[in-house]
Length: 115
Image (cartoon, rainbow, N blue to C red; front, side):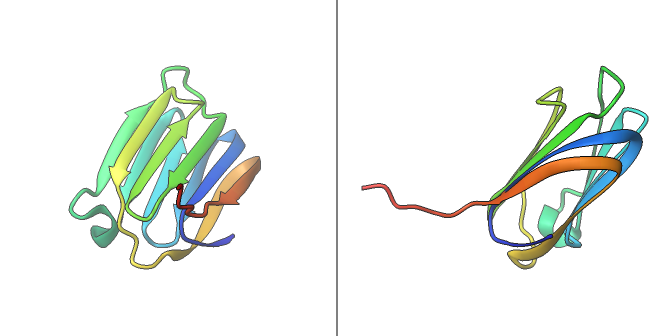
């Protein structure tokens, strides 16, 4: 799914392993309850890999909130959370979900000035 700018991805997944990719900038992989977040050199600004284990053992949902300079990822409604500065090479990127089964939505977020 092509996106340009900030977005909110909310998916329910089935299966013991899978992957969410944001272009060539960010990869979230999971297998057997382990979750690995990998950032490209530029997007991570020196931060490359983070790992966590989901206490319940299974991954059922993933939510990714990506802004122009930050990303937050919630696994199973917050059972595991990743938060990082995030500098993608371009705001236009392809969002890809790989799983045995998945269902969800992606929302493109817009900036509004409040007066």
